[in-house]
Image 1 (cartoon, one colour):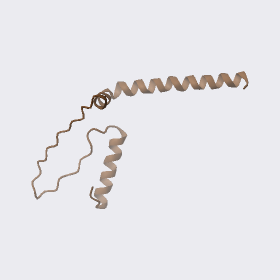
Image 2 (cartoon, helix red, strand yellow):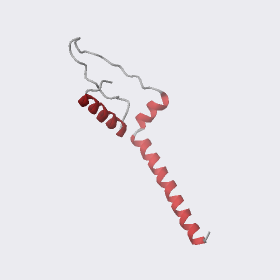
Image 3 (cartoon, one colour):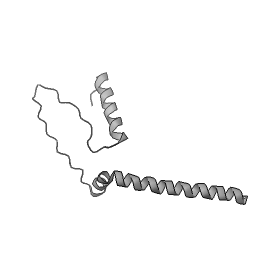
Image 4 (cartoon, one colour):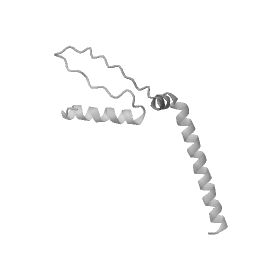
Length: 87
C-alpha cells in the first residue's frame, strides 16, 4: 500500500475508535441506572392489579425497557390493540 493511503486508513481507524470510546462513555453516563440494574439483576417489578373483574385491564409497556426499544414496544402494542390481536 502507498504510505499516504496507509496514513488515511490509520487516521480513520483512530477516529472511529475515539468516537466509539466517546459513545460508550456517554451511554454509561446517561444510562447508568439501566446499566447497573442490568448488571446486578435488580429488575424486580411489582404489579398491582386494581381493576374490577368486569373491567378490562389496560395493557402497559415493559417498564424495564428504556429508550427506543420501549417506544417500539408501545407502538407494537398500540397496533395490536387497534387491529384486535390479543397478546
